[in-house]
Length: 463
Image 1 (cartoon, one colour):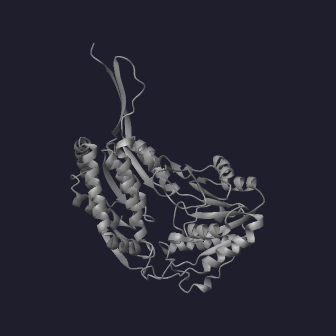
Image 2 (tube, one colour; image 1 turned 120 degrees about the vertical axis):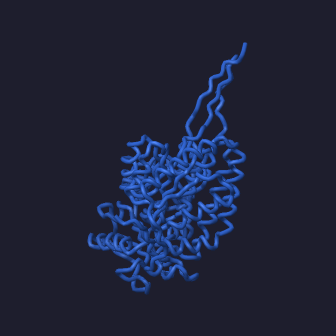
Image 3 (tube, helix red, strand yellow; image 1 turned 135 degrees about the vertical axis):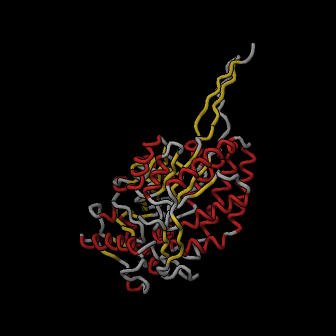
C-alpha cells in the first residue's frame, strides 16, 4: 500500500504536493490528544471560544490570495473564481459565530413552581470531519467551525486532492491561539480513514462525498457507535415555468450548471422548461455556454477550467456519448473549445436536448459541465420528473408566482427549494438532503444540534 499521497494538479498534470500518510499509531496519538484537549476546551466559556475562532477566521482571510492560488492548482478552479471560496468561508464563519449564543442557549420549559428545569446543549466530544476537494473550504467549514464553537475537538481528514487545505486551516487556528489538540488533521489512506471513523473515541463523523463513500461511513461508524452526518451529492433539477423571467433564468441556470466546471453537489444537472418557453430558453443557454473560455485556470481570462482529473472528464464524456446513442442531441460543438481534448481533464461545456429519464445523464450524478434540458407540458409533469430521482439535495423553480412555487416546493422531495436562484448555500438555512443525498444537516441553528447532545437538568429548589 502506498504510504505517500501525491496531488496531481489538473492544471498541467504535475505533482503539486506530496505528503506522507499517517499510521495507525498516529491516529491513536491524535485521538488521545483530542480527547484530553476537548475536556478542557469544553470548559472554556463560549464567548472566549468564539473570540479565539474569530481570530482564526481573520488569520485565514488574511492569507486569502495565497489560499485562492492553492485552490486553483490543487483542483483546477479558475483563479478569477477561487477568491469567492475565501469570501464564502468568511461569510459562513461569521454567521455561525454570530448565532452561537442563541443556538447553544439552554432550552427552558414552562415554569413549574418549586423547580428549575432546563436542557443544555453540550458537546458530543471528538468530531471527525472527512472533507472533499470540490469546495475544499466551504464544505469543511460547515462542520469544523460549529463543532469547535460548541466545545468539541475536531480531527480533519481532507481529500488527497486538496491536502494543503487542512494545513492552511491548522495554521490559522494555531495563529489564533487555539489550544493544542483541539483541532488536528491527518493525511490518511482509505483504510485508515475507516479506522479513524470506527474508533470508539470518535463521537460524530461529518462526511461529504459519494453515495458509496457514505455507505462506507455507515459501516465504519457502526463499529464505534458514532453518529454521522452525510452529504452525498445530488442530481439537482430546475423547472422554468411559462411565467418566468426568461433572461434571468437563462443567466442563473447556465451559471448553476457550469460554474466550477459543473463540480458542485448542488449544481444544476437537469432542467425542465414549460413548452412555450423551451426553444427560447435553450437558445439562450447555448449562446451563454458558447461564450465560456475554456483553458488554464491560472489564466485570469479563463472562465471554465478543467475537471479534477482525466478519469472524471472521461466519465462525463461517456454519459454524453451514451445519451447521444439513445437519441439525444448535443448542441455545443466541442471543437469551438481548443483545450477540450480526449485524454485530458479539459472538457467543453455541453447542452443536451431530446433527453429522457431512460438516459443515465438524467438520472446519475454528473460531476462535470454537462446538462440535459427537457420540455414539459404542465407543472404536474415537471414535478413528477423532478422527483424521479434517487437524489434530493436542492431543486430550483423559476416563476413569477411565489405562492404556486411554494406549493410545488412542498411536493418536491428535496432538502432545499429555491425560487429564481440556484446553487447557493445560505448559512441561515439548514443544509440537508433526502434520499441518496444524505442525512443530517449543517449550517443554521439546526446544524448545531448534530454536534451537541441534550442534557436535561431537573432541579428541585430548596424548601
